[in-house]
Image (cartoon, rainbow, N blue to C red; front, side, top):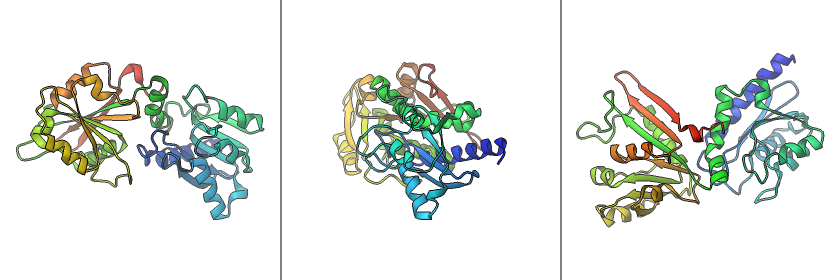
Length: 324
């Protein structure tokens, strides 16, 4: 295999690892989502896996298990992982131990662990054992969709471990004229593909924040539809209500739908949950504008509904860009 073929094989594996991890965004909290691809010496992908839930097997261990099951364990040569393998004992054994037990020669890492208590430990352990460890940036992937994707996967986790605060995403759907108000008799005007994106964002969140106006106008469910939800994933629903307008019955109904529902009277209070990794703001124009005018948000996803297609724009607040 030529060097060019090797780089292409690793880049393709990296993309598959990112996609695998993305499918479990929200399910792994408080852990970050992580994907892993294993290649043989010719660049063929032997296995792709992702961490699925905190406390369960990590991506590397799952990929190794898949190789064992397929009878390809002895062919393992290269690990391509979205996040630096862990080198500490938690609810699972260190991923570095699992990697070092295989015949692997190389490990390619999409992002270093942002936790200052453990950052660099996995890389140092693997290198000390004789493995070659590279960042994806060494392959020129830093500015690619795959490289950015690896950073985006851990952006909420990075913010929480460095600041103790959750990642705040604001979702906004507007029509061609910029209005957030759907036509009479409808609760949305987005297309099916945009609805699936919106519900994927909802699925990622541990906390959903809305306003009293939205509750009184729509009595929204805030459940995950349009795609399968993660099993046993209980979210908090926080309603910003400074004037006591939201009926108790709405909170009771939300509890029966599986939410931990509560009222907040202060915007900063509504957005800050030290236990959460990601908060999603789904609100009307007034609260949405208030959040965007503050310094509290991290990501703004704007879905603009056009005559022929929806346009989706993602903006990051400069101080909290994914590439920290």
